[in-house]
Structure formats: structure tokens, C-alpha cells
Image (cartoon, rainbow, N blue to C red; front, side):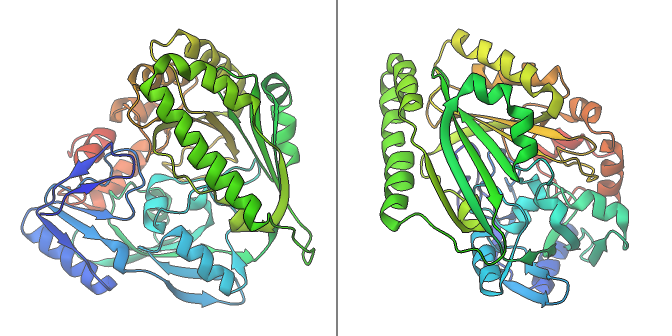
Length: 435
């Protein structure tokens, strides 16, 4: 046996068998063998989800040996990538081809299959999550068959599989609609929180990518605005020294030190939070898109994130700001707020509505349950939908009320996997028992 643990340390497993396929045919062979013997299997990527979604009790398929770009259509800018490829590797390979993804989140450690399965997203009022950039998927179903789906080919499977929770099959290839490489101008600066909230709708509409971090107990938010540069314009990246100081030293080493002090002496968390908010610095630079989108995260934390209707973001933040001072245990980490356009993917958190994403965090090893439960209660009042890879307590009954196509998804999942070969306890909880 080989013990597996996710990045945040919130889930672990001791599978009886770990398979390391190097081809789609080998993946199909593994799935067939598992199904014939009445076992269950889960696919593994980099383990960056905070939930037990990847926990495998009997068999695991480790996709990290199944990587790289498999095909490129130079005319359409469509790229087919093997499912175990991390976003970091994909960005580097796309860069070499003069291509880029339209939108990304700020972490690139996930595999493309993991990012697809859990609904990874970035920010941008006119843009969707990563799944909206998918034009075709290839999966191995529970009977070992290899199927391809797209908007024109098995459209119901495509609507389900673009955020599929690993419950439909093992993804082998993902075809993405990319575009010619582009650069972003980044502006990051502290601003009074009240000013940010007052201008939220305008800021989201005026910028290609807009987000902010609210530091509990402080008066300032760190606001990030990223906008495209005209093609051919010269970029002005941060110097290596400035990048090292700002991101490695300040945002990781120094911030991590403050968090560890707060964990050891909880009464210091509030003044340290006010201090962190007061010393935020400004920077402006421009660089290749993925170098602006992605930020190194070296400080470990736990996270819960919900998508809410964009028009309710003020109500939710007002309630959250009232909750934090009442908590028995203080909060050491900032709250992140992002936006996304509505999409038509059945289990996408932005399905059918323009959304705001509110992510709360707590430093690893510090109490978080009261905070996370209070947050869930607040977002429940506006129909909040949990990020599938981040911590939440909802079950199928609650989720059915929040997703208009929930039963459509379950129907496809039962058709693709009638015996529950791809299930685990997390999938059983969020989709309900097999019929």
C-alpha cells in the first residue's frame, strides 16, 4: 500500500492498488479489470482539491505519467492534451507554440483532468471557468469503452463531463480552444475596503480580470486588475529581484511567519491581520498571460468557496463581515472575491447565472469549523453553490435545489456507470445513492 494525502492534508487514503497507465488503452484496461472484479477506482492528479473527491479505497489510477500535448490544430488554435498534464506544464508547452488559454486561476499545480472535474475557474465578468474553454473530451467509461463527446457528439455527456466530478469515467484527453499568446498589464494595490465594495460592479465590468482580497480586521483590500495589452506591445515584467521579494519573501515567507505566530498565540491574530492589511504594497507590471494569472502559494491553508448570484455579493459580504468578529477563533487568512460569466455546463457553479466567487480560508492547523459553517449558512440564503474541489458539507438533497440540471447529470452518470465503479464516499454524498 502507498498512503495518499491531498495538498491541504484534509483527505487521505490507503488504496490497495495504484495503477500508473501510460496510454488511453492502458487506462481502459485498468478500468475493465476493476469493474469485472467488482471494485471501485478513482483517478489521481496532483491532489490539490480540499475535499475527499480523489480518495480511492481499493484502486487508484495515477495519471501523472500520462502527460503532454497530443495534437495541435494550427488553424483553429485547438489543442488536445493528455489528462495527467498539469496546468503548469500545459502553460509552458502552449507558450512554446505561441498559444495561451483565455483565462486561468491563480494556481497551476492541478492536472487538466482534476481542474476540469472540479470546476476550476479564474476571474473575469465576461469570461467563464476553465470548462468553458473545452471543445471535446475523451473518456473511458465503466465498461472500458472509450468515448468522445462534444457539443455535437453526445451533447448530454459533454454537458455533464465538463464538470464531471470523476463520476462519469476517466478522462484521457481534453481538447481546449486556445488563442494566440497575449500579455496582460497587471495592477495590484491596496485600496480601502469600503471603496472597493462601492465600486465592485463598475470595477468588474471595466476590467478583463478583477478580484480582491479582504484581510479580516483590516481596513484595506488588495485589489488586482489585469487587462490585455495590444498585440506587439512591449511587456515590462517585474525584475527577478522584485518578483522574489514580493512573492517569495513577502507573500510566502513573511506571511507564513505571521500565520505561524497567530497559530501559536491566537490573541495576536487580530493585530497581525490589521498589520498585514496596513502594509500591503502596490505594483504594476506586464507579462505573458499565464505569468500574470498564476501566483505561487507556499503557505498551506484550508478553503471553502461558494459561487453566489453576482447581485447578491454585497449582501453576502455584509453578513460575512458581521460574522468574523463574533467567531470564537480568529481568522488568519484573507477572503478572496472573484467573478465569472454565466455558462451552460450542468454542474458548473456559474450555470445559468453571472456569479461572484467568495473564497474563505484558514491557516493550516488553526480552527476553522465554526467559520466555515457560518459562511455556509450565509451563502445558503442566496442559493450559493460550493466549489466541487473545496470544503463544504452539502449533500445531494441540498445540491439538487441549487442546480437546475442536477437530475440530468445524475441520469447520465447512472447510464455511464450503473454499478458505481467510479464512486467513493464523497461522490455518494453529493450525487446520492445508486438507484
